[in-house]
Image 1 (cartoon, helix red, strand yellow):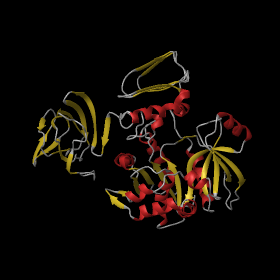
Image 2 (cartoon, helix red, strand yellow; image 1 turned 90 degrees about the vertical axis):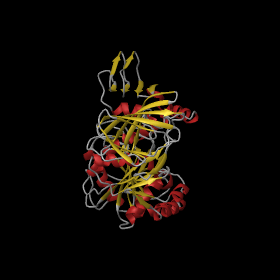
Image 3 (cartoon, rainbow, N blue to C red; image 1 turned 120 degrees about the horizontal axis):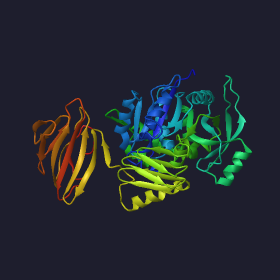
Length: 479
């Protein structure tokens, strides 16, 4: 490849179809579902391995910003920019943020748009497909990748290819103009597509130039173009992140690149490709790509299967035994268990809707809550008390705060804690403790080189997380 490639990583999804492992505040792209690295890290590494690949631009939910930065740091990838969406507005606005970013210096900049939560097994085949797509994009097309069909799948959109696109440079793959896009079909229609030929699955990945994308967006969705241009022009920086103007971004219509542009433009092209792709959209699709035993079972964690076949069983915190069941999904976490037939994965949204209507939190967060300074998780809770485990990363600190309704007792398990109460500093080491009276300003820091672990015992009439009055915060959270 001669052109520089700018990976645009879209990481704004909530991944609720993989509940209970994936939660809104810790979605699937941040989880190691198919390998030791997370799906986001795998996507970043895949893009970085391409010839002439530049530092990536990430577009993500503002609630995930510190987790995403931490995962980038863990694999030594420094993004060119991380744009924080104040609310989800789908892919067309998200890609527009990156396009405005690049177009300010080069309208011909090549954008490789990749969702953060896809799996691709064949890096070599992926690189060849990208090389072809780049050549087509340089001819003024907006290119998507069409995954070769191998089954009448009803969970994907379909693309019908038209005439071949002639390129001056010979390529190993052939690109085609897009004749039509089709929504997720029923099984009978999907089988007809498979038999007829000329159809591919819509992968949701794209190659296009920044200028061409903005031109097509202005032509087909001037409302989105105007809103994102305003949001981008009024952007601000905070702690290394880029924040589009909140009001302008929230006012932007929500739409996907498929609906906003690809299905209406006359410059859509498709590169058919076979590179072991999956969007890992459901537990069934994860079972399909996972290694299996002789009974067709895929497992993770501490599990025991007896007379069980063609199933996906995963344990996160305790032993799980399944006896005499076939074609089931069993997912165990510390606070929730999912048991369902593999064919019912699309009905998982009914459970999420129930949690939302009931004002529960199981769809939003795990017991372990991640914060920019570390994490905490509940251990026990009763009338007027609760107990938490807290981990503070080396060099990090919690906000300077106070509580109206609770007192706190901290016991250091390992590491060193700097405790500040009403301006007085105290250093605590393993097995030492301190007491924070109700209403006193206090702060917890880790001045050491190893993680600080402690137990917090709260007591009082009200123990909600919203009983925090912040006076100073290192991470720009609301005071």
